[in-house]
Image 1: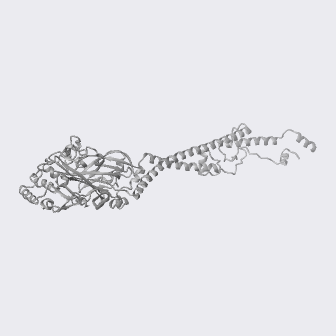
Image 2: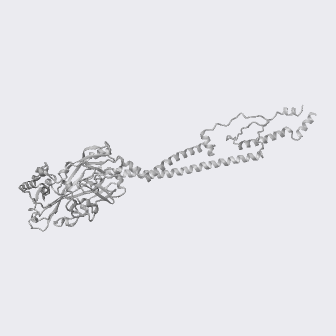
Image 3: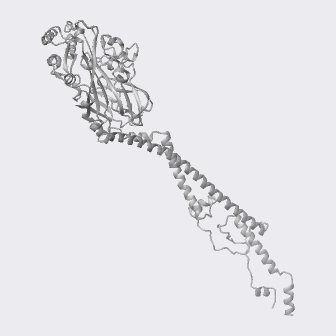
Length: 602
């Protein structure tokens, strides 16, 4: 019976228990899919069961604790990353940081003046700075040259005697001197200015001179011509007394002197008079240049504003001059001749230089970019031709003409108040750009722009003149007062007599100076170009790497999403339609013996 029964069970259709197991397995697959749908996936394909309505079987496992990196990657859909993927992500962050820095540098170098302004901070004259110390006590290798030309009146005796139609002047020189300038009586002020006096010393350079100091020249008697003007303004009694005293000296209208005496000083009887010389005993046209200047200058150090660098703010303790008529002509806001603000040069607008020899500021107009000393670029500036023009030609000069009884023709400027009322009328050498009427009674005056016009070759980055020439002629006007009337009968009143002309030029730079100039010029330019194009290159490179990294990570994300969708589709195909109530079915497999007992089998 039992054998028959066993054969019956083996051949019978599936029992209720086997059907139950099949249903439970199907429901279990369905539950796994539902768990994935409900977001209970840990990322490894294992589902977390919940308590069922009839089974009460709650799982003891809990979700993993996610780190910040996990959550970040989860939000980006990049959970399952390999070490290579993480490396790409780290590189992306580094590239982004480098990109931000390079783009910032790119805009700074290409669209701002930050680099130039940083370099310019080294130019300011801050107290105790290296720049200030070099300016106060410069190395002699940077000394300038002073070249003096003397007008020798070769036939003046014949002219005064009526034996010659015109005065013949011979331009002798130059006498060349090395000019060393230091700053004396220096005071750095709290308002970003420095007050000082120039202290100059001179050394003759015979090898650069075409005239000797002991050569004798025949020149106008400057103390006598100057005394004639001063005596005219004295009270009557004093005028008679001084006139009589001077006539006793029997001073000629033109006298013979050595070149050294004429330039650097000789003992003069007229100057020795207390009423005229004020205690002085010697006279020389360049005497006041040698030693500490009588004039004090205050200029801006550039510490508060680099655009104000080198601008003169006071002259002899005054913020304005009092030599001229009108505020515009009395303004002193020109640069000190040895340096300019580089920011002012960038616009190529006119710059102004204050010349103590003229007691006024003079404009310099940009002419062109030039290359000197084998590939050093400079900005060439020149004085305009109408700087000393008559107000009818240059209305801006009208206020320079109001402090005198007469306004002289174009080409000279009345500087009598600048020279203690002595009749000094400066001009360009050989009356360059002046009215020919000024030299109609002279032979030997030959104006030439190349020789007689002032120009400056200025370094565009540093603002100091590398080359150039500052050229000025000193003239004296003849005033035919009773003191001179007899000797000057042949001369017209108000005749302008040329005395000397001088030019200040840069010294001959040695190889050491030129090397320093090359390094400072091309070195800084090379650094600037490297930074400009380097930031551009880094910006483009990092941007390309960022794009490539993002493309790689995006492809990885799409690949993961595709794999996830495929896995979900396979599970749905196995499970069929999902249970409506979303319950979890727990599968319990009974031992074979228990199953038979349940059915009542022995």
